[in-house]
Image: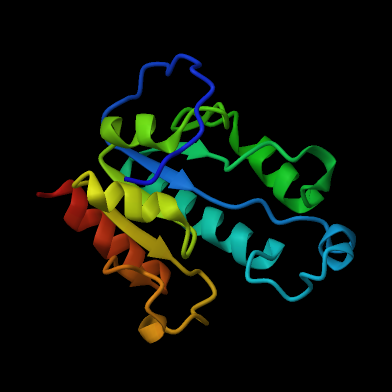
Length: 170
């Protein structure tokens, strides 16, 4: 099992038909260049595409979304990401969970898990028997890279929608 740090905060009631979404904050370009990580996969374009595609499918099929950020990074987070998350939080089907709560405590309460490639939350959900996938909205990652640990690497909105329909129609 993959150990996760946990704040011990209480988890609020999670509605039925919920997808847990585990993303990674895109950081400001200046912060990335300071630590030598220019050109990383976790760009605003890729992460915003990841979020927007999931939200669109969830709204179309009446799924709830539970967003779990990896950690709070404050102003180092890219402004476009902060603005998108802020605009989504008023929607009735979208819920934000305290970043201090361990993913391992959230996973048992949801129906499916979508993670940014190739974060440990996808593997953790798979170990727990939950429907779990990685979603690459850019379509640029190689399926053969081996980073998916046997989980599906979905690379189009259509693939993601079909995967979710299968998850909820079992």
